Length: 290
Image (cartoon, rainbow, N blue to C red; front, side, top):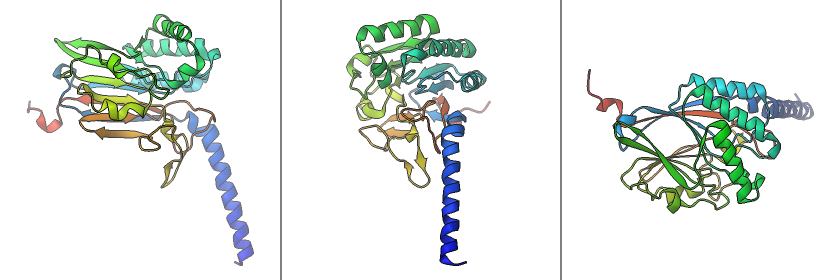
């Protein structure tokens, strides 16, 4: 085959690959939800909560997509979580408020378990005043039955042991206040920390009670390339915490790739993610034989 024909063939193949990638990125992958199962062993976890199963959703950027949302609800309920957490960016435009609240209410009803959420940077874009954001989260609490943590904490009790949940306001736009978030939480406690973006990871690693930290914001890069990974992540850390499990000191961190998209409705080699995290206080080899 001569050089001209080889070049023509290469051009046709490249065009075909490009077209297939566009179809996948815009029409297929954004709706192809990945179910991620993680197991984390943390000795500090109170034994009464050994095996607690947490469902993490992030970055819904809610748009009315009935088939996708029905799929999410089905996967969430089938996974039988003990706790559902959402790490920010529920919506990015006001016209989706009612549909988003209906989805959250369905999530609470279908899983029959507590739902806890924290603000993301897009909530601060959509709601420009404190009064507007307070009104939004009042509706999340009353109409969707979810708890909202904004630089504050709550706890669950089992057999006189406590499982703390700490929620920060959005750290990407600088709204997180870690001192307020951890107020009243003993250093000796076990705390699950919910924060929208990885921006405060190094500071959170210095908090003794912060044992497991869940975040989103990055969308996993939203577009990833083979052998390269995420092309760009909106974070002061760049692509360092684009997606996945990390450890800083004694603290375990997980960055969720999110459900929705931002700016462009595209995902490539970076599927929407629904994550189940089972937390254990003992590894299997520590368990006594029956």
